[in-house]
Length: 492
Image: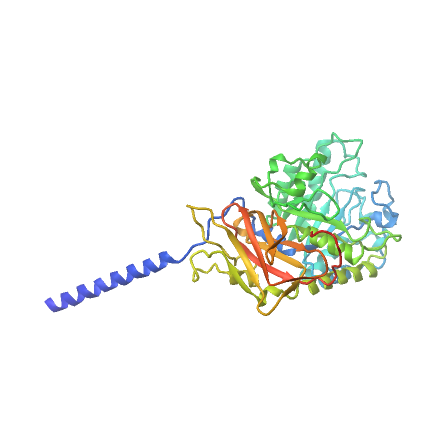
């Protein structure tokens, strides 16, 4: 009996020691750093990863050859006899776009769906004898291709007599908003702006009511406006974000439609309490609606826009207007395909992947799971390099990319932050063989630097992070050669 008690006691002791050892090992597994608030929502993260989305301006302006309709157009002029929304979706799919946003109603007040609240819609058009529904065909075609949809519903309505009578018009607008979101499910983005009739500037839009109704009907939708609540305007219609561009801003400082906030929208705010990333809107043509006299922008112009939008921590929404037949014009579709092919050509080969990457330090040591290899994998959100965090002294945080066999040849540098932990980087420097070539500020989801000249040859590229909120968390880095870039301009 005494022998049994002794063995049992020894067994219990060993179990306790093993438990303590396991607990000790678990305690030593390094944890991720604390986030820097504010943080993006799941919907905002998914939106950011889209990078380029499609806008489609289509309506009576397409047939009247105007940019801004008067509201007095005869609905019968709307007659896209060859309307093929499947062609729209195919063009978007081929361009790698995962979201299409349609102008369900523009300033002229003409509705592309058969709204029960007005006759100024497809109901009164000659197209399909007034029995058609462009919005439904658009949704069906996009859904079939696996592409998400969104709508623009203009607050300014130049046709409806209730406009200018606050209560009556806001009730009308809200009714149409509910109609859209109840009839067409799974909307991923809805666009609002603050445009008003110049002669009725005192009219009020009940944005708070509208936004609340949107979230009630479809909670996963992203709301775009000057003040969000999920995505903000970049402050211009040129596709150009600020060289400094924060995803954070103070919504309390924003008034939708105010001309005084454009610069603030363009740069964001490092002290912002709201996560509100910017969307850059621009048209592939000079105008937003299709005009026979216009042609698409040159490929070089579109690539410039890519670098100043997607390459500056934003999403690019590129307008591709259908023509009077109801198709995306062949020259627009061809240029868009060239654009996507060029992007794929530039970024298909990350030269850094074949290099030795050295870092200043690593959180948790070499086995901590936050090493430099994370910057070269395909996960640009959840996998990242994290340097050591030392409360006692401010460390110098840097990444070096070394060529394994001779010189590196590139003219584009990419840096990405793990924005799921907040936007952190405030300033950084890039050196090529010890020579300072870039002094940057923000990074965010993606920062692209296109360098002077045709190609840079170097043995080592060093990215030094000067200032950040907390330690920098770098999800991805890249070196690329852009064969379309032949310029003596400064780096962008």
